[in-house]
Image 1 (cartoon, rainbow, N blue to C red):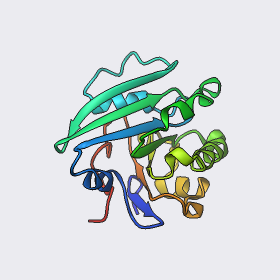
Image 2: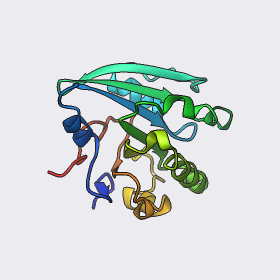
Image 3: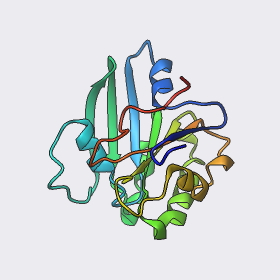
Image 4: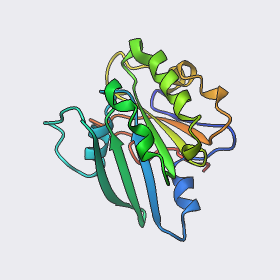
Length: 185
């Protein structure tokens, strides 16, 4: 698997494209984007939307963007990741179809905090049906851990409660943001 390659996980293999396939009738999907602060959530969201990323400050609440992708309406909720805001994350769980967990691939020191927060989220009853997409962001940085290394650091093989997939990406270069191997092909 290459540095920016994707991996899929148990139980089954599902990602963003599978979420879209499950929502064929409604054609509308609610995605919740979470992660530790400075992981790149807002940058990813702005790049999805074609917006300028030169002036991004920490999210002190939430951003909502509605985007069209492959004939679907994606309602993406980007919630601030500062420690003081994490207790409010549960206010956004209701009706979530997919959870996008954004990881700063170059932040080696906080990888265990990242793992702990992710595994804690997956215990939330309101997220029980949500598919998990881990975006291993900042792959363009020289010290970035590969998707495989993040897969191990986050102990993704121990996740049996949710369908999940990990994708290396870069919000700055747009590499693998919406394309890539997100579902069985």
